[in-house]
Image (cartoon, rainbow, N blue to C red; front, side, top):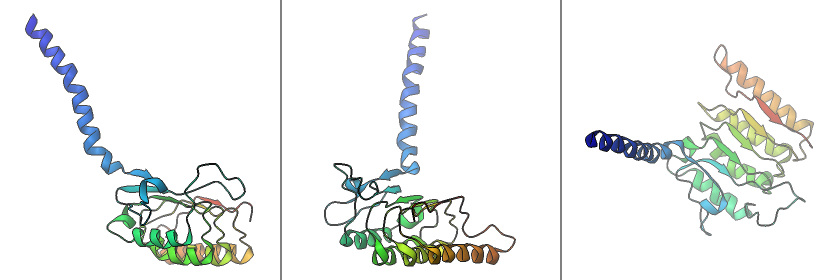
Length: 196
């Protein structure tokens, strides 16, 4: 009878250990959401192991105390460089830079790196001052991403006018036409153009 009690106790102990072992082995494959403090050491970004990048802050004028995610122009260039290192471009599935003043220059810096993000499904650029020119650059970058399909694009609060929207629609139509019977190059399911 004592032998049976020991066996039951061993099984009870073995299950949690097995669960911890599985979590330790599987969790790196699941990736992680990285934020500014996680990725920036004051001089450079390290995006290794990141599958999601959340460097967003609330819209301009609604600052939250302690929000240190707003990217300075120098950091935008550093971020673009870091996105080109190792396998970062093939692992990022979501990027949110909302609230950072990218403007046309920052967007032009990031666009080639975004084009390399083949698994990107969400891109958040709310309140980043991209305007029409920035939306044209983003549209081109997303259409260049081979194998990727951005399902969600947030470009709200960016002073985007008819020219920017026209460029986006033309780009999406062109991508769908060139894909022919295949799936469209960009399977945009959610687009936020509010407050433009």
